[in-house]
Image (tube, rainbow, N blue to C red; front, top):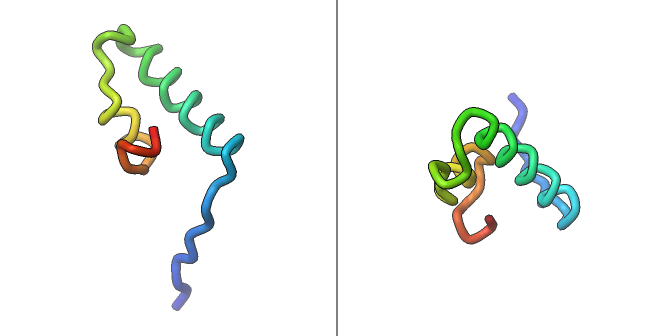
Length: 50
């Protein structure tokens, strides 16, 4: 059985992830209809990291 080793993303890598997630959500709904909590959930991170 393998254990899920989590690796902390670097700043640039995290930024690119969040931009990608946000753009995906914004492509389906207007930016004012997307919350920070939704972006965090879609990225699999906590709200403060956003």
